Length: 170
Image (tube, rainbow, N blue to C red; front, side, top):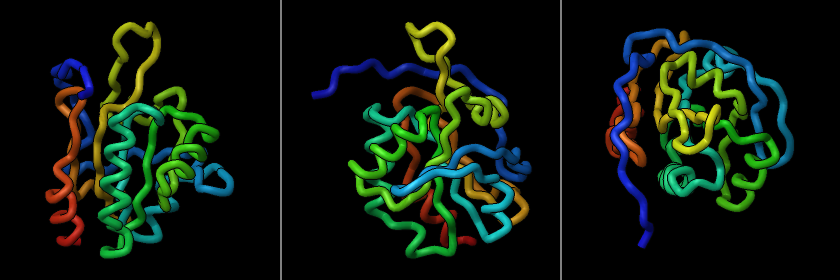
């Protein structure tokens, strides 16, 4: 049994439904390579499901990506699924290989994207280290947020059925 304490996170003013999601350019990693990519370029191609998650190697990241992989949302819906965490491109490549993830992952070690979205989580016991709160954003072609879920405690996980319902409403 995993021994951890559930911690309530402070309220935050995060990007929410109806808002325009902030654009960003960061390294986007797949199983073979990475290159800088802009969220706006992905969105121009169609809806994007942007999944913020804890650093690679942390158990919440494993749970989230196992669930998303098993549900294969991009096969059942016209959506591009991408992740984002503070982990480096090297760590992302390892996570992709070990978990059999067919999705690309943005690398944001300075956590600037989470800051722009209002979802920074300062890590206890690690001065100056933060990561994004787990969050899920469904964006249309104009980066308008059609669905938003942001963790209110740690650890916390999205309601995957609710995300699927939002995808079905596209």
